[in-house]
Length: 137
Image (cartoon, rainbow, N blue to C red):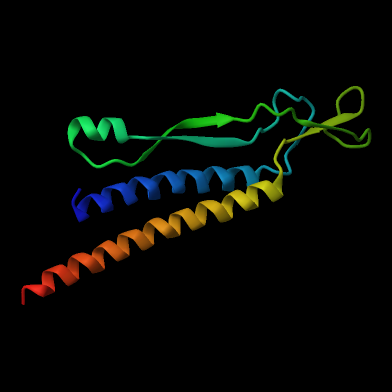
């Protein structure tokens, strides 16, 4: 593997973590959503990643990570009795999204650190290439 493959691998990681950060931001933006029907309420979404190592070995390309898709949480919406709320159903219940903001913030910190690690890997590789090129002068 050449040093240039590090850029490709880190690039796939940057893309994946960007998708992860965007889904977390969407989850946090919809954390306070209230509705009158549990089926229509916003549910947390999470990206699904996979490695592309097997594909890389066959084609000779660099390995990395890819986003297979975004899945919706199966956790039920939170049911809350609030008969005076304008969105309350016939029984006086409202439904809140299933988003745990503390968990989402922890996921955001993890994603941003992963993103930062990939940037650092690219910067270190760049420095190594520059030092290698300057050895010949």
